[in-house]
Length: 216
Image (cartoon, rainbow, N blue to C red; front, top):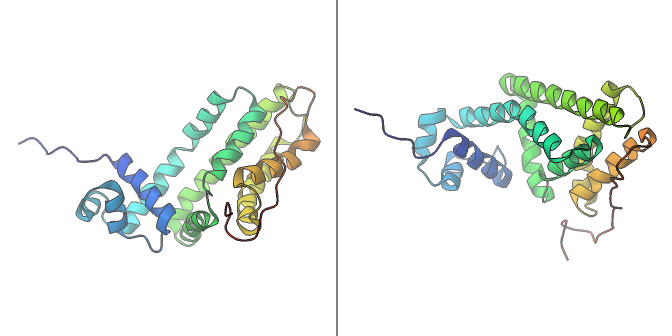
């Protein structure tokens, strides 16, 4: 007999998992949450991934493997290397439509730091991302958008600036996360700007009333 076709691909299930993690956080997440998001029975997830941990590990593995493709897409959409760096800031800001959703993503970091299997993937992803950022910086120097500098050190600073900037924005809640990260990136890169820069600029942070970001 021919095997029964799968009702959903693993990729679709992991996308549903990512949405459920953003909504509930990894600690509160249940297979029922993911199943509801994907429109199937929890038993299907058990059959495919074995357990909640197995599902989250598959999600982390997918994220680590996709790093190169994600940066290649940024490069393709932005011929200017400097513009690609700002597009990276926008992509990272997409993790934080609200401070609460960012908190759910950051809760995954607790797993990355305490579970050796998750940490191995997080480390590989972090190192791959830093190498891609350095490649953007090297290209920006070739395009005369940046002056010559130690791009390995600057790539590390960019990575730290964007990651830390998300947390700072979630605390301060001024403007949008994208505006905040763009300004932080502009501040970091400004001393290195060359004559061939493409004029990418960040919007100024605008003060907002206290409370939830985006509230009236």
